Length: 132
Image: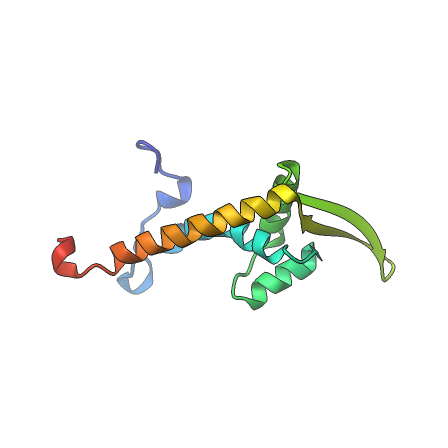
């Protein structure tokens, strides 16, 4: 939330079935920030979009095409990925790999991820009596 603005999907009741809070908007927000890091890490080895999606899915991070491909395009436009088209099995496939800048970005994001993780874990794991 920025100021008083609430995204449209947050204006709905935040109570789901069985009276449980609806965590979906929060889950999506968390995933959005993690996806770029996960994609960069998987692209340490060159892959094309479909194999990247499958690799992320095998690791427990399912990503829709409509989310992944715009991310790859944006990272390429920003200079963090390099891609080229190749003919394979009678089909054209676009292969992606990290650029030098992308490798450096991955290193910096990994460091940041670990620091944020330590901080959040310390906050979340703090005993209830101290948090109140």
